[in-house]
Image (cartoon, rainbow, N blue to C red):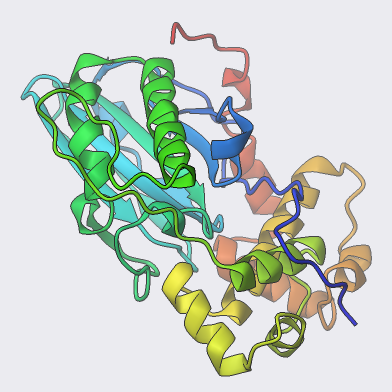
Amino acid sequence: MLRKYGKMKNIVYKPLTATPYRQNEAYRELPPENPEPAKYIRCFWGSSQPYLKEEKHAVPSLVIPDTCVDIIYFIDHTDNMVIGGFCGVNDAAFRSGDNRKCGHLISTFAIRFYAWGAYPFAEDSLHGTVNGFYDVNSRFAWLDRILRQQLLEKCSLRERAEITEEMFLRRMSAAEAGSTTECVPTGGMSASVKIRENSVIDRAVSQILMHKGAVNAAELAHECFVSGRQLERIFNEYIGVTPKRLCNLVRYQCLWNEIMDNPGFQVSDAVYRYGYTDQSHLLREFKRYHTMDIRQAKACAYDDVGNIQYSFDM
């Protein structure tokens, strides 16, 4: 029997990318400084400063399912152009390349939400967004309206993260105070303030994280006092995936964390700990999500380990 929880517990869960040690001019992560946005946002990421696009930056990188959703901005400082997109939850790995023009001064800025952390700030359902990439205005027009111009004026990752975090703090404060409009820069448009949360999602996600994904949908529905069909409908609305799929993705991410953090990792021990049927089941599911076996995945993760001590002026 699962333990009962109401409001979501502050369970430590830090999903990893395929290359968690990667730090270079094109990619760096910054966690939120305030604990309130940190409940929803895994990190801010992007280029530390604008850089000159060269052929060496065009090598596609592996993107694995990380139980997160991203708002990503691609900035071309040469053409004075900003393109924003929203990437839903991915349940399959893929290769991502940079097709922007060589010789241009470019940068990237992104907000990485936990899979269940984006909907409270969205203006529309996340249903059907799995493995999709959409215009940021389709669900986050309020954010885009304020942030887009700032991205051309603020060039460092730290500056961009600070102003974005402040935007979320203002929106959360306005919603808590019951305000109907938010404060926007002079000349901007007002927008309704809504922070949409759901106690069923809070309870279900707490259970999933506490059990490291080794939970079945029927148990979740029972502990959330809803039917299986209703739970699936709420998950599709708020997260964009079914409870079963999210459980499998969280289990995979917890496994990937242990592989990277535990030098004495043993597959045989992990089978029981994460509720896999046997070793073959674990290895097969890991490769399904990562596109390679554990040995190859670790080698890929350490490809950029030499850059860990690289410092940036942010």
